[in-house]
Image (tube, rainbow, N blue to C red; front, side):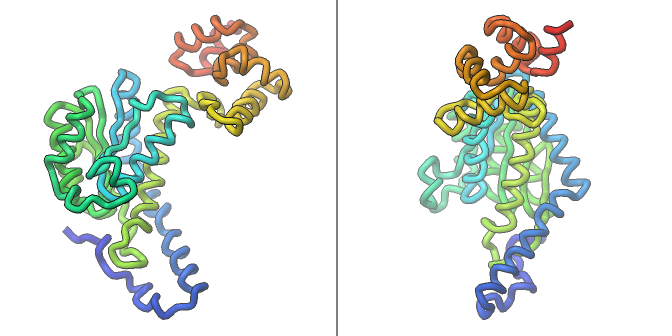
Length: 299
């Protein structure tokens, strides 16, 4: 397997002698190739296939696990953590696991990524079941920790995906769906926190956001399940209600409080002209989709 993530970039062979401006321009130019690589038809087809699996599993009380080492593991944890406040989900629904445990988020744990057993052990510790889906993330596509986790997941019937930045990656052979975003050699040879990391971040954004949209967590383009856990998010929740319904700020404030700080319920109360309990019940009957709920209430 040719590992382009480890190859030397001919455009940056003399980057150490460049001016600061030229270094920055070179990095920027290289970064621009990342979304183009993701947009390749075969890559988008694989991402779509994986999102469809994620949506199906989450609809049936399954969970999504990201597993990886180093930068890949950190990006998975970041995406999982951001899903909670953005889409108002239970932290158990989307989880990130990193080789070496939580401490590896800050300090590299030597040798942790080389253990196939570590990937299996971490998934076992989270009681992985056949209802769940696991995405193994590795820029090189060869990380033993990820291979071990994917093999275990498949052995118990969980759905699996592999996200790498090399063609014909090893982890692709250990997953049901392979997502290979080939971004080419890094600006600094082997520093896959750069283009490869950017590619992984963008793909994870796409997977989680698309899945949450398909689960009714977005109305129009508004994050209607946002958890208003601080002053900034409380203000955002009120403005979301305003944008969705056309009411003024004071009215939005009133309904947010009446809805027990659930923007989605407040929106249905206003648009459907119903009380909090009716809005909540109707939303549950329509799997949390506001548009379908409103249509039902006004019929």
